[in-house]
Length: 263
Image (cartoon, rainbow, N blue to C red):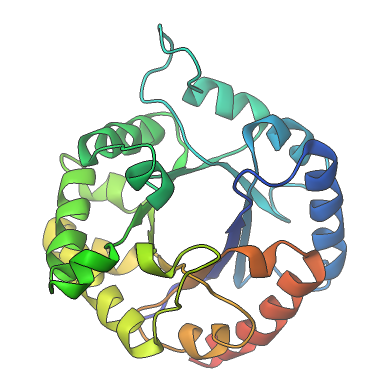
């Protein structure tokens, strides 16, 4: 299978970095990676809402793409506490994460909510990064594939192939995320990426399905990143705390980029 034109590497800082900390992190990350050509690298960071505007003042879109951690599915309305796509665009961000496991399993968002957010993001020319993944219980019961297919078929329902070609998908097994997470083996990650790839090909046709970048996220670090990125269906890495120090993130980038180019 022909690989993506770029390697996708990014991080979501969750609820950890203040505006000042985000600016410091991005400035340092830009400095640490300024000699790395972006011709083959799509580098992105998803900071907190409050830091988004200030983050854009630190880095240019061609250096580091910025995204929001969530989004409401209406342009305006009586949705106290929500952030609309218009507000996200105003900050200079052009990427939005949708359906992260914490949104699904802690804040109880449904597949239907994620579907509406994906459609809304595309209407506003925002790149949706749809996160999917099974829980430990679903994995134990052998339901992983069914859960992934359900999240994809429900979350992407109604999209035309030309719309689907604009989205990214992150596979983040719930049991692999966070401080107590256990990283998936390279074999397991590749197997589930294969399930996702076949599902999007069924939904949108092989040509479009192969264009959609599939990222692995779930306790990625400097030791397992090289073996993960060499798997056929893994087009990038969505890294957690191992990427929250600019020097550490840059080190991972420099390690995996040559491996991906040779893949």
